[in-house]
Amino acid sequence: GEARRGGGGGSIQQALARADPAVLKLARKQRMNTDVRRAIFSVLMTANDVINGYERLMSLNLDERQQREIVHVIVRCCSASKDYNIYFAELSTHLCTNKPSFRFTYQLALWDLLKELEAFSARKLNNLAHLF
Image (tube, rainbow, N blue to C red; front, side, top):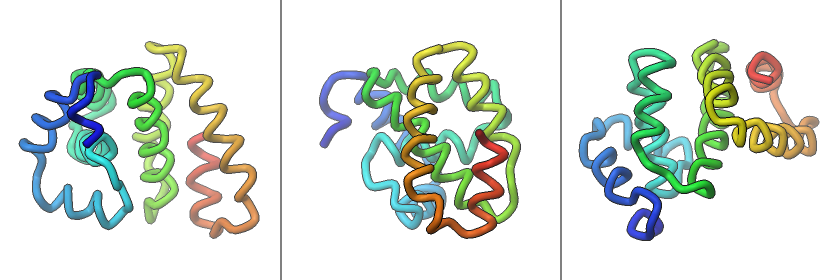
């Protein structure tokens, strides 16, 4: 699949090979439908803290297109959380501070979310309001 093309496919495959099977099962349940998304999800869910999460995400050696998936997965995880988790906002801030290209990706994600706003539950709205 897409992980075999350039842009750190080996790192993606290595991350998936090391991932806890329960985390990968949860990734599929959350509709993380590509190897890239599942690898990102695994890193996000098993990181010790924001710095560890950031470093592990960067070690996936994703190309620019694949890096956009980090934002997609963070937004999906944040909105799906039962309770708001500040980890996603702090990691997002760290991403945008250290790699400014993420700022535009978050802006696009917010615009996409605004189009769907009426369909969101109160919990999802609350979590996303804290993230952005």
